[in-house]
Amino acid sequence: MKTSIYIGMLILVILGGLSSCARLFGGMSKDKAAKTLDRYLKKHTQQALGFTNLTRFWNEGNMNPNMFSVEIFDEQTPEIRFGLHFDAKLMNEKDSLKQGGFQTQSIQKQYNEVEADFRIKQRMIAALKKQGIALDFDYYSAQLQFKNTPTPEFLKETLTALIARMNTNKSDLLSSNYFEFNLQTPPYSTAVLQAKTTSEENEDWKLTSFSLNTQAEDYKLIEKSIEQETTHYLKQLDHQYQMHPASKVYVNTDTFKEAVWIQFLSDASEADDTLVKRSMAAVTAVIFQYFNPETHHIIRTELTPIDHPDSFEAYWEGIETQLPFPTHW
Image 1 (spheres, rainbow, N blue to C red):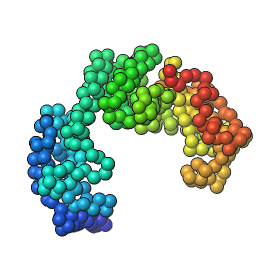
Image 2 (cartoon, rainbow, N blue to C red):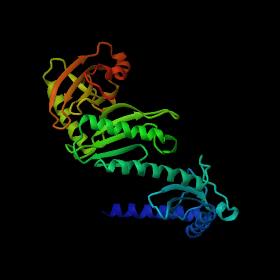
Image 3 (cartoon, rainbow, N blue to C red):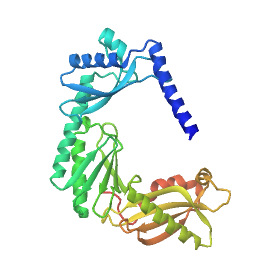
């Protein structure tokens, strides 16, 4: 207990020391930096912008004691917000914005981009809400929560229309080129179904496959169930395999009620007693566990030996084409 207290006190001392060092080397106070930023925002932006979480951005990677980080937000629509770094001394003395790194856009231009992104997404959210679907965005993904269990056709129509609308506005959206849609339907407690898309810089998002969201609680339950079933199956074989860390999951997009867990295998070895060692072992077989993602029930199991372990990479890339059902449309 005493050790924890001492460690906590030491951390506070270090943090305080960093702040003091910044001031010692000529760093502007937070109060003055806040007044400087407030004055700059009123002069150089067209909206009523506020800010929060003003923090000195001074560390071993950035030795400028006058650099601060802050979150800017629209006072009329607080959901419109973005992060900013600024040199408070230059801003105060020269009415200049130095942000460090590669960011060179003015605050007004950054606001315009974030505001456009927000408005477009709000229109998409409102449109789906009328259909009983809750939509929420972040940079890498969107989550769709269906109030009623959708038919496969309705689910595909909804997602197709959403991707098309995003593509129409792609130049104004602040979203990753590798974008995922996580879908929650009534049989699940979390958004476990996942549609993966990809796009190049100036190209549309394209659906590449339907899988499961590894961050969802439902996924963890499915994973545990499949691992137990796979372990039980392997114990019955004459040839002793062990599960390799590599695996893939695909969902049947004709029904969304069937999926396959593709687990790669290597020959069992007592020497492979760590995850790192198992990942280095040659892949000698692959097991396909076809299952119902709602009930976790195993529909059928198929095991295929890999005769040439050095062909694993090609096998990994092309395995989707071997499946008996479509994984996208």
